[in-house]
Structures are given as C-alpha cells and as structure tokens.
Length: 225
Image 1 (cartoon, rainbow, N blue to C red):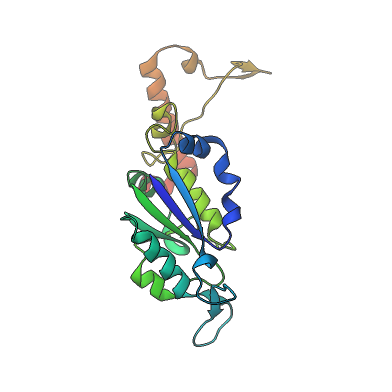
Image 2 (cartoon, rainbow, N blue to C red):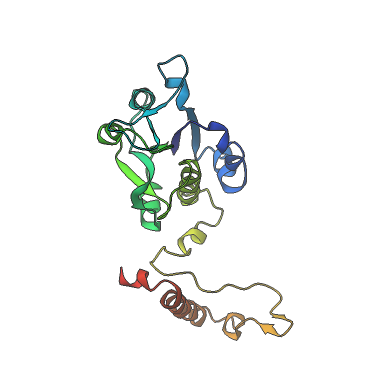
C-alpha cells in the first residue's frame, strides 16, 4: 500500500512514523508513506496556501490552487483508490471504514487547516471525508496519523500474529473482553478460573459473553447498529 499525505506541516510526521508497527511496515516494504509539503505547490512568491473567504467571516481558508496542483501531480503518476479529506464534518471513523481502506493500494490523505479548504477541492477531488470525532483540531495532521495507524495495522504481514487484529474491539461491533497475564493472583486480585482451565471452548464462550456484557455497559449504541 502507498499513502500520500498532503500537509503544511510535514515535520509533524517524522517521529510518529519512525516507531513501532508503522516503522516495521515500512521496513518490510508493505507500506510506503510519502509526505508532501503543500507550500511546494503554491504559485505565489510567498508560498502561502490560505486567503480570506468570500462573503466575509472569521478565519482563513486553504486555497484551491496548491491543493489542485499537488493532487493532479500525484494522480498523473498513478491511480488512487480514495482521496480522503480529514475533516470534522466527515463520516466518523470506525473499524468498518478502516477495514475497507486496508485493502486498497493507493490513498491520498489531505490535512486541512485554518477554517477549512475551498469547497471546490471537495467537489473536484475528494472521494471520501473522514472525521475522528465530534470535535475540532488545530489541523488534520493528528487525524491523518491516527488513520494511518488504524489502517496499516490491518494489512496482512504488518502484525506478526494476524489474528490479533481480527479480535480487536469493534471488529464485530463488540468491545474486546477483559484480558489478563501473569501473575494469576496479585495481592488477592485473581484471574478468572475459566481462563486457567485450558478448556478452549469454554474460554471462547466466556470471552463472547464478556464482550457482550462490556458492550452493553459501555457502548450499547454498537448493539443498535
């Protein structure tokens, strides 16, 4: 998979993508991450990428020219499955969206800033808009980093034990059950006996029941879906 990220703060991603699973995915050549500085595509001498909005109002708007130039340059080199704008008014990110994105080959993530981007960018280029929650961030970089992490970990070969990702919370619209490790008794706080029984069928049944119980308690909205 190749992911191209368009941003006005390219240095934001330097450390994030150099650790843990994301870094290993790149070392294995399973994922290519390319960061593009939007200012490099600005046609004016100041390399500015924002301007006042028509009709008045508070806040600056990211202009269409550099974004259009950058996306068209990338599209001239390869076909993209999705061009995604990270926006607070997009579809709320969930595991189903991540699962679908993980089987694509080429993706573009556009990080917004200021008041947002010129609507014509959305009309001409954007194929999907994604929000990581009902709140507003300073920019789309943090959201893009989260989306990269959530998608890349699902690609076969990225995680050593591929079944691990399949048993995460939300994969089946349920929260994951409680998990434990050694010691089995810590200051009187014991691991449930069933997990020490060695009976795989009973353990799986217990985990299913605990997932359902936990989801009812903390996220009943998932069951409604």
